[in-house]
Amino acid sequence: MSSAQETAPSPIERLGHRFEESKALQGLLAALNRLPLPFERMPVVVNYRAMYAHTFDRFVALWLWKLFGLEAAESALLAELCRPGMQALDIGSNIGLHTLQLAHLVGEDGRVYAFEADRGNFETLRRNIRENAFAQVEPVHAAVGARSGETFVFKSGANSGDHRVFDSGAHRLKDRVRMLALDNYFPPGTRIDFIKMDIQGAEGIALQGMRRVLTENRDLAMLVEFWPFGLRQAGCVPAEVLAGLQALGFALEVLDERPAEQRRIGDPAQFVNALASGQYLNLLARRPAATASHVAPQAVQSAS
Image (cartoon, rainbow, N blue to C red; front, top):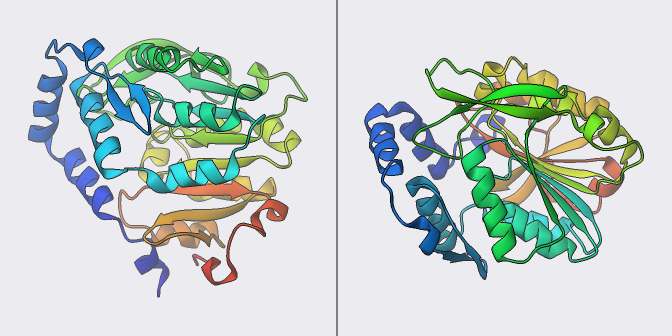
């Protein structure tokens, strides 16, 4: 099977692309998001945990997660890699789906740092943490970037999972927010065992600000969304982002839900060129000693 075939968009990705291209659908969802519905009294039980939303689109997302098990491959990988006592980062926590799972996995002796840039998402994240009594989670209202200071969140009116810290030219409303470089936020020597990062194309920027953290923690594993279109809008070169991780000693694998397996990335430029326009996917980054025990030999293929 060719690389282009192996990296073809899933049905969910194709649906997302159609949504991005449909101004009518986005307008409808933005209008629904402005309705003053009583979300604070409408919990949805997802993975045995009560979760709340603050907008219509997040309420719908909770039901999609509940009914159809969206992001099941990511959740399964978290369950495999995270153990009691670990310290984990959830960068781009949104309203806390993966934050709550990480908190459960690391237990009372572990720690989860949940970073969320958007104020509305952050307040709902804090409520979901509080309602589930996860004292081991430290929610942080900030964007994660290449430097510490301030930046803007450019807000999507239709999709509260698509706020961005760069101007995509879509004339979005913006809010000022604190930005953190993780190398400044965490003192030298801080142990970090796992990072999940999904920040809508700003991943390359965030990685620039955590090089010391990545270098110090040799056994660190990362689950990172990779969206070349968004990375380019944020001013990054997608293949260079991958090559930078490889230069730090990380082996990169595609987390593929069709079937649920990992496939090794060889040459970054060839891998990026094989992706369909607008495609996004999840990557697992680990150093080879950790990777060898995880991927079955038949599942390890070059993406080139």
